[in-house]
Length: 264
Image (tube, rainbow, N blue to C red; front, side):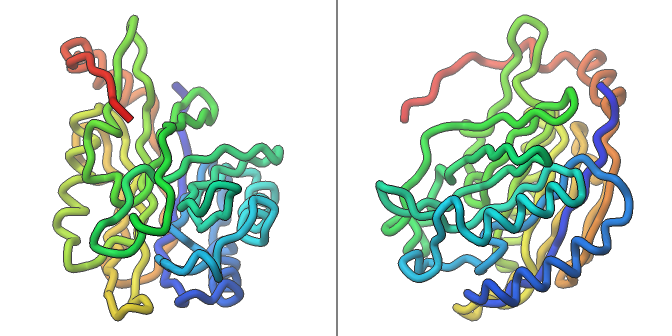
């Protein structure tokens, strides 16, 4: 595989203020001067982790989706982020993958957080998504999904891995930052993939502080790059396709993975 150039934006989020957040991300995007293949934003990048979808959910033709579509086209990069979306069946926390040619791919957050009202007012998804960029396969997930290894489990069939990169977009509180950091490493090791975890910083509307701790981890569990805790940052990294292939060939873990099915 050829190398994959990626960027992530660790940002503060103005509580339920779409206008301020989009202006903030304009400034962050402007810092990306190099050509990259993928740019990852935090969960609910335009509102923060709001549980007020009646007021802040959008349609798929709304401002938030249009925003990342434009950034994708302008920067000729795939852009990933999540936001509240209104559907005919209710509300979802939808991860949007925008491609420069205007294609949209979506994943609705499967695991809804029970320590908030999310699980009561948001519909959980039941479909997984694999995004293809160059010859890489990307598996994007959302925040609380990180705690559920079966849902993210890679597979190995007839010499092929299901995916090469895990992406988690999040609003993960600093109180549980050790869990966040530990599980990002665990997911990369157990699935033999790169793992990109992008979290927000700052205090939300409930007074909950977020330290960010966004990072990129390789298949050995080694941290490639990380943002400083509590600070906004735009970080770039190159994911080596050759290194991943050589590691998988030298340590054939996938050949011994258990086969399983998931009940939804």
